[in-house]
Length: 155
Length: 431
Image 1: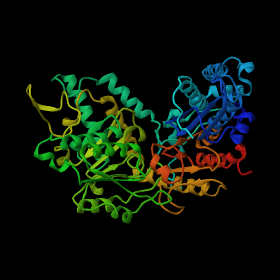
Image 2: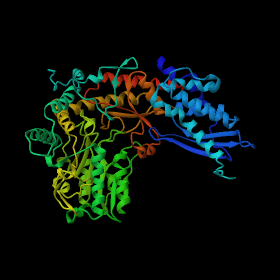
Image 3: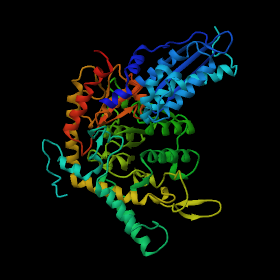
Image 4: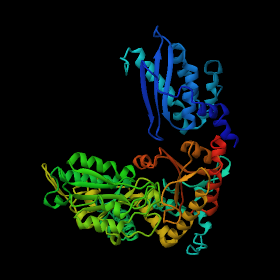
């Protein structure tokens, strides 16, 4: 079972239960729905920017999926809420690099913090998409918000 | 091997036949592999692998093309394979059409019917011509492969797609079918055995009902032909589809069965070389079945290998295969239905079902269940098994499915159940 505990690290199981950021966001600047058609996991991510438009003021998501995908959304929320957009873009790039590593090398803890717990997931090729789901959704949200797209729902 | 394949103990086939399947003799994550995913794809015995290689080493040549001695040899092997498969399912050889898989076989009928509705095929194709007011009937339990082609046919022809509703356990009855099949029904398509619930459909009753209303019937036989004696003529269906790789055979080949006079009238959806009688610059006329459907180079070595898989199953005896799987089905139900916090979908204990069990562990996603089993060497299928509407109806997104075959042992079923019982504890659910 040692292999399995490398995948399901305590931090991941913990995040899968805490689900930080779970809940639809009021007045978002951008939302994005991401679906993994092979397993049906899905997430709808929303972000609201601060007055300067350069940082994420609030993040909220609704979703359904395996413990990896839900824990990943929770861990991402913890890292991205309140962060500058440039910093979040860097985080997403770093996370993607780690998830493509197939378990090789060392994860960048300075950059990714607790999210390095997902390094073990990168060895499981069939689960990488689970871990990436929320991050891809957030990336699309940032792209839409930065492009000055109209808000999806005005109060 | 010299095993007496008909020696059945407690309904089970002898475990020694596992020696015929090299794939099964391996470890998965440090444990002996328990392969419980034959409903998705079965493993192949050495005899099937050898037959394909022997054909390629000694008999391979362009089939039905030219007139050489070599072509005679390859064409004979190809057509003998068709005869072997035909006998296995109660059909005549010209009622067996090679497809690339079962999905392709279903599409050949749906696309041919769309061609008929577009005016192709002349007066003979009238029986396939659908339009507004006509109804196509499926069930809510269908595999996507037996749903989407009919959705598309309805959209192309203006016909209406209707479906037989399923109960809370995913099963349906002839009464449910009778509430939907009626005078407007022109075509009925449904699965013989559900790939999610293992439910056995009341085929002959549905055929009788549909035919009384003048409708044609197509059977998705992917989960029945490999597992139980199946005679399409006896069942009375007009068309059927099944796949080689689920019955110890190769990938890349499936079978379309159709009653001869219907196949001869169905417009070929794919056209090209080897399907024709006369071709002019303006038009073409087509050969009778099966050649009218077999455009282009065919999966010849795969057909030869499929025939060998059929011979392997025949040597076991399909009655023995069925008895073996009935015993394993009972064990699967007994073992899984008594685990606290695990919901077994499908027919209730005591009802007939195929040797497969899909389960939901509330609070733990199927992917996580599957991963937990995988770490213990147990290979299962997780997800919606290409049946999203059925899962939605069951109030689920995904399930974990264990499915058995001729080489599956009672010990493997028990390992599955024992590991399943540990899932909630590991993920800290309901503790």
